[in-house]
Amino acid sequence: MTLLANFLAIAIVLNIIESLVPVIPVPGAKLGFANIVTLIILYVYSFKDSATITILRVLLVSLLTGKLLGPVFYMSFSGAIFATFAMGFFKKTNLFGVLGVSVIGSIFHCIGQIIAGIFVIGSSAVIFYLPIMLVLSIPAGVVTGLITQRFLVIWQTWHNEFEN
Amino acid sequence: METKRFKNKRDFILITILVILVGAIYISFKLFMFTEDAAQAQVYYGTSTEPIVTIDFVNYRVIKNYIQNVPDGYDQNYPIIDEEAQTITLLGDYELNGIRQIVVIKYEFGTANSKPSVEIIQEQSPNNICSREGVSTGKPLICLPNRIRVEFDSSEVDFTV
Image: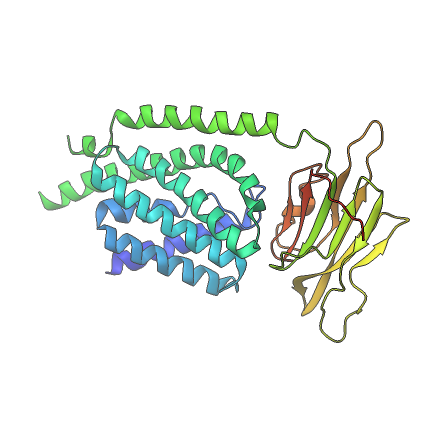
């Protein structure tokens, strides 16, 4: 529990840093580096925990930045939900490793944000931003995946030493 | 041996396929979208599907469809159309110190050498995404914090009254 709360704090910090650096030329959209934490919890704990932490993260970040229930909030929320469920599903299928699951999560993060954007903006014009977002989401997913992979390997060895 | 659990050869195949797929979408999008000259651009405010201002590139005119509904204490004349400077000014939703900020849109009718275009030249928002987007000849411009957007239309619409 304490550890999960720590993860939540890290996720919030990552999310806020990310929203301060506008790397993508898309209104309200983010690359989803906070997905690192979602992914770690998914592998270390369970899907349920990772979904809970992700929802809490989005809610707390929007509270902290004063954007609760604003247009950006709906986009973040939808993106996070899409990414979490997609990653949970593909982790369960065991088809891919952490890297693959991360890239899938990143792509669904974009799709989720765009779908929410269509409703928030009231126009399908946002779809024009999807190609550039997808192009950027793959490297973002790879970076997120590599960091997570590295973390899990260290975590695993540390745990093994601790237990033996 | 435990670390193998996190790695999978299929990851690289997946990433390669996705890179090719997404690359193809992006390139075809760049090549085939917005090649036609826009016939008109519509300026929208909020989630309304009724454009507040229509820029008619074919007949070189700007039509104010209705007056923006703004609270008391603000200029009641938005959108303000300046035909000399070729700008349209609307009141955005983004607030600085509790005061809503204006959004200035500059339009350019096409000439023999240039396409009709629209650019958001002044706007206040945390990341200034829509004004950094620059001049657009077809790609929609969206100011999310201000809830103002510009969309293009390539089909000519009959304006006979």
